[in-house]
Length: 362
Ligand code: PEP
Ligand code: MN
Image 1 (tube, rainbow, N blue to C red):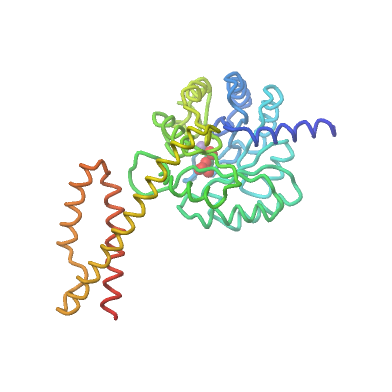
Image 2: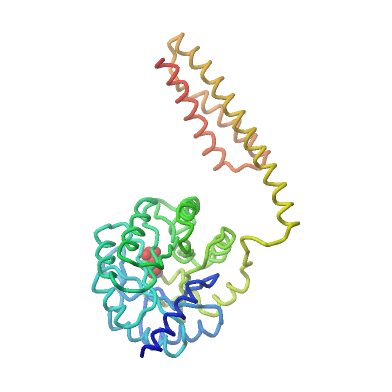
């Protein structure tokens, strides 16, 4: 028993350190046959490390399938035994933590709807005290890094050493091409602030549909994510939850085959010399941009003084529209997207207004 425990612990550690770490499996466990067959077909791809499965499903609206519950845990145990895949389950309460651990689940994850609630995260953390199990924490459904970090801190304070992050996108109102907007900059900032934590991407819940899974997965790999969690099902169209975004294990295998796996670095002097040269150019251009922006603000201050002397408002909407129109036209020629131009000019405009306000108040 002791020896078996140690072997399993080593296996979990090995998976945790493997790059890319690949997690796949159904959104929800439905039947024992479905769980075991999914696991077998995933194992056959030779590319999957961990079998994921929802057992308790937090659904946005009541009345849809809310998960098979604890009776599905032995099915995962069975799948684990016949395939050698590790298992991962979402937990949202102390009881679920207890049940999952009782049935040897190897990795736990905190879902996006739970990360938003410090009471729930604390309950999970308290249930984990004294336990050695890796925990993945999904981003909260709202774009709030502090909540995500707070959840990491609560789990870490309970003594969990192996903590990872799952970027699953953020809900936004209205139609976008995604189910949950990726807001990549938030994942990048989270990674910058927590470089020691594993960062996994969840294309399934970002996309909500199959046709763009691969491009999102590729983008994550290009951004140096440590792994992917992707939902798979033996009969995706008839899945009891998240049918639109699931793919067969075989399709997953093909997808993982076509992804171009990048490395963060290569130990070649030539490569570094070429990169350093280009980076020097970037630094130089950034310095110039900064100088020009500084000059621009000085001119804005002069305008501010002029407006103040003549008792004119700071904001003049017509002029602002004119600036934006010019910028869109010019930006298009320079290969800059409308989205970028809008964000950039919003920031510059706001800074200008702040400079002018200072002049008004002085
Ligand atoms: C899931 O992984 O099936 C799930 C419920 O995801 P999320 O917490 O990201 O909505
Ligand atoms: Mn799902």
